[in-house]
Image (cartoon, rainbow, N blue to C red; front, top):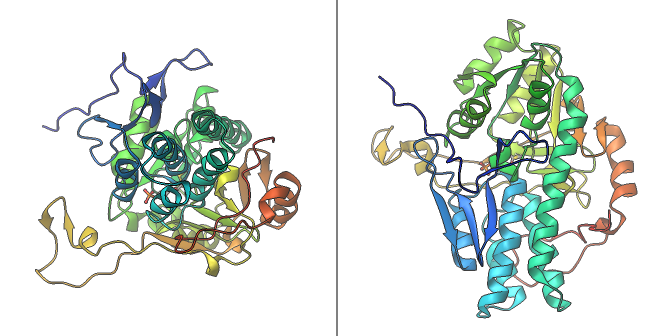
Length: 376
Ligand code: MRU
């Protein structure tokens, strides 16, 4: 018999009483008594372990090893990592930014979160307040994505999603999962096909856990089963998150997204990408410019510490792939549902300061765009 999955401890911080009064919102991380608390996502669904991170090195390690993961959540975690660096006083702002910026190259949000706090630090402003404000803006944007995207999820709609783009990936609500959550709360009883998402199983471990927490109907499928269900017209729409979106609408997301997008188009199924502003990188035009993280081959050749291939088998392990804009029906943004061709105008209107490129310290993992416009 399978053990039942652990649920969130009702009395502790990961489950917050929401403003909507439902009291069932998952929170991936939060600040508590001078430390960053984060659900250790490597441990789910076996157990809900909450990390207590008290220095920037611990935060960097948590991001590198995917204890904290998902583009918006990485950005918020990194923002608090900068706060811890400032408080400890052992690293300068540029060193701390370089440390955090070197953890994972693809998620644009990481660099935005770092930069928001770095600016406050260098301006002698309150860094914790800057990080808190950044976290709140990400949470609020995900809520808006949920509201904007919910009408796309009709009664009983069957939604395919890839990886985990839920609250665990964004602090609260999610990006791809937010419209599904809202449709569920509005009584439309959606059903979710959850790609397992090899090699680290973010879909099977995390998305299934989140949906189970909320009672949303779902089934996990092997990654290579998605085409089968698309072809058989058992998928009404595909919704995924993103790690970086260029102004042309090309975007990077968890490896395997590209093939889902191509198959969706081939089968006439709408394909949506949900993302907050921090994921958009208006400096980039083409998806070819997005840095794609390649992780250790052992993630492919073993599970846990158990080998799944003959000893010494070589492997390649790109963590993301890039999907051209032509496969995207629309982006679900905090400003509404937007066609790819409307994106660059919208980005220019909403984030004018983001078009100016700030000079990075030498050796920084990636050039960072200009300001995250907090006045928005
Ligand atoms: O390697 P991960 O688990 O950090 O990858 C996460 C994804 O690819 C998500 O789909 C993406 O960050 C969007 S999260 C809202």
